[in-house]
Length: 111
Image (cartoon, one colour):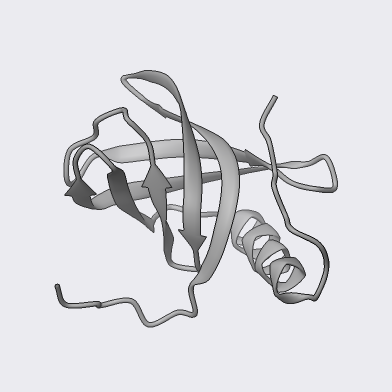
């Protein structure tokens, strides 16, 4: 498979909820400024626009919109972020910088 990503990807384990045809639990297993991989049993189709939310360690919620770039049934799918506001991009950048700092394991949970 050709890896077209050009941003640094971080291996993470972040609980999230995504909205497509209903709200579904998921786990984000890699994250970059350009997209992420969504580990979920719920299905999505290539080109579908989805919104997902991650509870951040500081208590805020990071809500992002992405287009399904590829599918890996039954494991999950890759998202390319689209239609992000300047505020969302900045919040994502700050979170990625936080993840790069040395500290204990990070596990964000959406409640």
